[in-house]
Image (tube, each protein chain N blue to C red):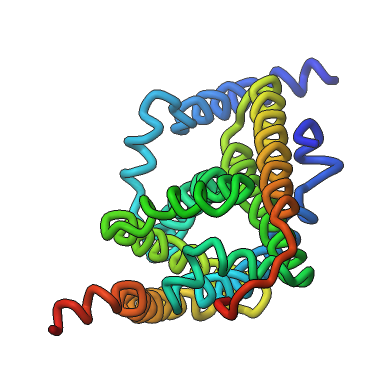
Length: 125
Length: 155
């Protein structure tokens, strides 16, 4: 990927994706903040999480939030490193580390979201 | 013919090399100093702050996944973890985090407008507006987040 930085892959696709995911994240973040902080109970109690997670569409939004955020963030960090002319082995190491950490934490987040049981108990959302 | 050309052009080649060597090139040792010495316009500050907030936010995302991991261990473990996050100190940190999110979001919108909506013509006023909107939303979020504490103070 970075080997052909100036020829085959100019990074223009990732540039567009970075903007598209950024816009999506701004929209998701507005909803996230309203849900988490409009009412202190909705953000910080187990029952509220259970209730939200009893809807599959909410899980889908959560999972896409996780993946979009992780991609946008790590692509941004990768972009910072690409601003400096590093040696090829350094680029490979950084890229591999970002990829491994990103995949591991996305997997962890997915396992957390999917392990929450489907129960609807009260009316706190 | 080629040799003649070279001989005629030799003074110019030497001169050009000489002047080229005088041009200041990238100095790795004084990298930070040199970067700080550049005159900064609104766009430079936006760029610097966008970077700092971005790195902080990806760091927070990792922390966020970690802090929500007790969800798998049931209600008691989660409530115990959440106790430490609802202390006034952590709420203040969360409020500061919102400032980071706000700057990165509003400046991100500014970047998209510059790239896709002819924003290069009005990027300075966009920067100022993003600060105005950001400060207003920051204060509003403070009131919402600390509404309970503000209520206590009012009594």
